[in-house]
Image 1: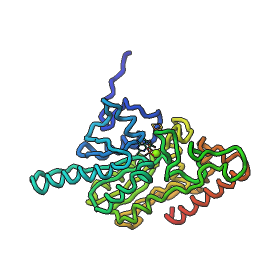
Image 2: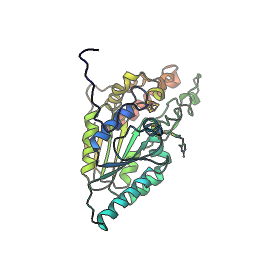
Image 3: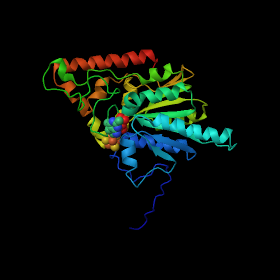
Image 4: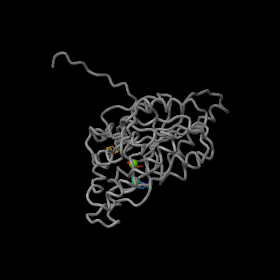
Amino acid sequence: MKNTKKTQNNSLLSSGHRACAGCGQIIAARLVADALGSQTIIANATGCLEVTTTPYPESSWGMPWIHSLFENAPAVASGIKAALDYKLKVKHQTSNVKVVAQGGDGSTFDIGLGLLSGMWERNENIIYICYDNEGYMNTGAQASGSTPWATNTTTTPSGNGSEIDAIGSHLFKKDMIAIALAHNLKYVAQTTIGYPLDIIAKIKKAQEINGPSYIQILVPCIPGWKIESNQTIKLAKLAAQTGLYPIIEYINGKLTNSLKIKQPQTLVEEYLKQQGRFNHLFKNETNKKQIDFIQQIANENIKKYNL
Ligand SMILES: Cc1ncc(C[n+]2csc(CCOP(=O)(O)OP(=O)(O)O)c2C)c(N)n1
Ligand code: SF4
Ligand SMILES: [Mg+2]
């Protein structure tokens, strides 16, 4: 072909990975990797991000990166940090390398929570990033502690009837931001892939902070949410704009920043109706009541965070 140029791939998370087209997590991880820069060591829990970027013997990561088990990325990160600190204190080798642990919501909210809590308790200077797609997506969209109320997943299937059992998940999304804040972290933030520049800004802030930090990013999943590849960014924006997934930032336990929602307020129905995982909510009166209930959750967030 004439007049074509070979594009240069300068990202620290290169293309050629096996994530689904439009995967919110891989778009976010790429922004995160490039914002962190090459002077970073990442410990990554298992999940879609690990599986799609490192099929042995290949890797998409252009920076030091280690795969751990589902449950122990924070402990691995602590070990790496201890080795770097030893080099600094005993061998007097200076280093500006930042240690990062990351994982999906399954590993963060549920399976790795104990070791994450331990890492935070030790007050270590490590950034933790959670890519929240609201389910165990790599193994076929099972419900996690992050799955919202009334979501249809493979372990919380919605039924066809109008009885309450047919609404999908009967559990509330766990408040990981509150759990992080209860550990007195220096920096706690929540954002979505609908706001890429916000992700970069939050990573840079966490890098500057000398202490533990937690950043949680909403990352829509194409098969898990039963959406099309081109809906990722739009839905991640809507999640914030409805108040269901507020963009917030805490420094030393104080709410310092939040993204105000645009007026007139977008109702949660607009967000829910575009996702197959909530199709059942529009089918009968019992289920429709759940939409009002989810709207209440969003309204409470708007009040709580003054959005
Ligand atoms: C201890 C343990 N339990 C279960 C699994 C199987 N497993 C691998 S990835 C995964 C789902 C990961 O979910 P999440 O952390 O939310 O990441 P996602 O795939 O959604 O990005 C599961 C259940 C495992 N590898 N180890
Ligand atoms: S299943 Fe979901 S999280 Fe996994 S690669 Fe596909 S879109 Fe991304
Ligand atoms: Mg997940």
